[in-house]
Each structure stands twice: as structure tokens, then as C-alpha cells.
Amino acid sequence: MSKLKLYTNGNLDQLRERTDPPADQAVLALINDPKLIREINEWTVIPEVFNENFSDTLISFFRLYQIPPNKSEIVTLQKGQEFFDRKGDIYLGLLGFYSLPYCYAFAKGAEVLVRSKRILAEPGKRLGETAKFLLDVFKPGAFIESKEAFLICAKIRLIHAFSRYFIKKYSKDWKNEFGQPVNQEDLIGTNLAFSLLVLRGMRKIGKNPSTEESNTVLAYWSYLGKLMGIETHYWPETAKEAFELEKLIRKRHLQSSEAGKRLIDSLLNYYEANQTESFLKGKSASLVAFLIGKEASDALRIHQEIPMSSELMGGIFSFLGWKNYSGKKSHARFNANFEQSYFQTFESKPEILLPER
Image (cartoon, rainbow, N blue to C red; front, side, top):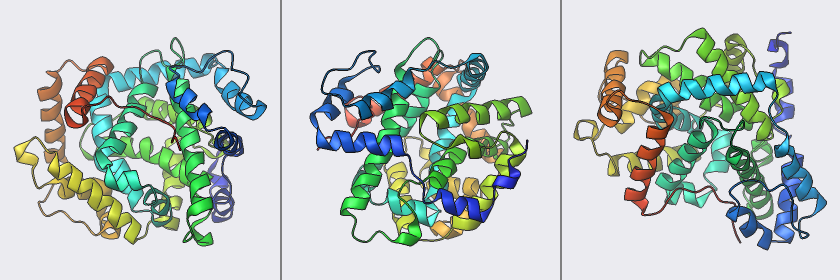
């Protein structure tokens, strides 16, 4: 049955007022017993048995991640991981130069992001955390043979709930018109940015994914969405549904804002300060503007100072792929390259941690 009939302003208005009750309740339990936050941050996988200090609320939350994928989900996971194994470098590049900047052009969602001081003060580390999340959830065998990715998804879900808690408790300038912080519509929109927009970006640079690959990516993010507390009843199952849902969200929320401007300026300044390819120096805004398109560029008040084209962008991605991997692409090499680059920049390893108070 088509989900197109679900994509109405009325339904999305309701999603703006819905959050993720199991995660919100888990965070309240952690706020009441902060030492458990440090214990969770020390985990490498979700344990089978929890210590006596864990409340029933927390145990119930983490039990959600001890349900193994079914046969159909295993097929989706294997296909998605094979896709990332071939095109993960492009995926990560488009995440940084397309998906994230595009999200900043959505004014109400940007209001949540700009309230995270780290995303403005340490954009490189936040970008690295996002890259680590992608690499962990697309690692060959993730969710099937290895269980680390379940913990990563649980942490991301709790981090969203911590954001809601802190904004509601401490942000005096939060407006009702923004909806609930990190609400269901914004969660779905972010998942679309990490899936549909990456596929769209591949087409923009001439790296065209097949119909089967596109369907696999959407199905993969349906599985991830379930693990991160998204109401997947609304998640698109076809390219047509994904196109229509993203178009409606864009129509509802793509708008210029000071929050979005602060976020994009912080990101572009980081790119320019850390650009190691001389031929790309000074071109970060042009690269982003080409990918996100005129409407989003206008909202963020950036433009193509240097004209870009599909052929030129495709050539840049191809050159960087050849330089970094010599044609021998794999998840293991993507991960090693990322960890080495991150350590050279920050002299530490990338981690996704719950906020310790």
C-alpha cells in the first residue's frame, strides 16, 4: 500500500509534536543517576545482564536492541553494507558537503542544532562523530555478526533525548512554533538527508546508483530509523514516496535563519582551515552551493563563487578516490583513512559519547 496518502501537512504537524518516549524516559533515569552515563560510555556493546543500579526503564530501553534482525532485514543489511563497501568514500563526502549543509537550510531544525555549543565551537569533531556513526552502522557484519552498531544507535537516540531535555529545561528562548525539539518530523527529515539526498548527490556528480541500490539504501535507513526511535510507519518504501515526502518537508521548512547561517559559516570555515588539497582551497562554499541547489543556497546565503558542473564535481570525487585508495576501495580502508585523519587533526580517537554532567 502506498504511503503517499500519509504525507499531508496535518500528519506532519502532528509529527512535530511527537518525540521518542522510551528514550526520553531513559534520559530522565540517567539524569537521576548520572554515574550510569559514564558506565554506558565505557561499554563496547550492550551487555546481556545489567547491574542492579539500572532501573526497569533503562533496562527496557536497552532490551529493544537485543532483538536480532529477521531474515528480510539481514538481506537488506548485507546489500547495504556491500553498497557502502564500494561507494563509502563518495557517501561520506556527500554527507559533509551536501546532507549536513542542506539540513542547516531548514530553519526550525537548525534551532536545535545551533543550541549545541559544540557544533559551533568544534565543527570538526561533530563532523567526525557523524562520520564514525556512518562507518559503524555500515561496517560489514554490523547488526548480524557484530553487535557494536546497536550500541551506537542507542547512544545517538539517547543523545537526541538529552538534547530535548536540556532545551526544554534550560532554553528560555525556545518557541512553540519550532515544535518539540528533535521531533519525529525532523528525525525523518534527517534520515532522508542521510539516504535520499546522498543518492541524489551521487546522481548530481554522475555516480548514478541503480534502482536496486537506491531501494537498498532506503530500506537500510528504515532499519536504522527503527533503532533510533523513528516512527517508521511514515518512512518511504519507494523512491517516489521518498521524493514526495522530502518535497513536502522542504516546502514546509526550508527557510533562511540566523541559526542556519551560523551553522553553515562554522562548517565552511572549518573546511577552509583544514583543506589539504590546494586546488580546492577557497572553493568549499562553491562545492556546497552546487550540491544543495539554489533554493537552499539562498536560504543559507552562500553561492557558487566559482562555477561548478556535474562533470567537474564527478572528476573531483574520482580524483580524490584514486588518490586516497588507488582504486582499492573498501570499508576497512575508508575507516582507516578516517581514523588516521581524525587523529592527525585532534590527537585523539573519534568517539560517540553521552553527555556527562
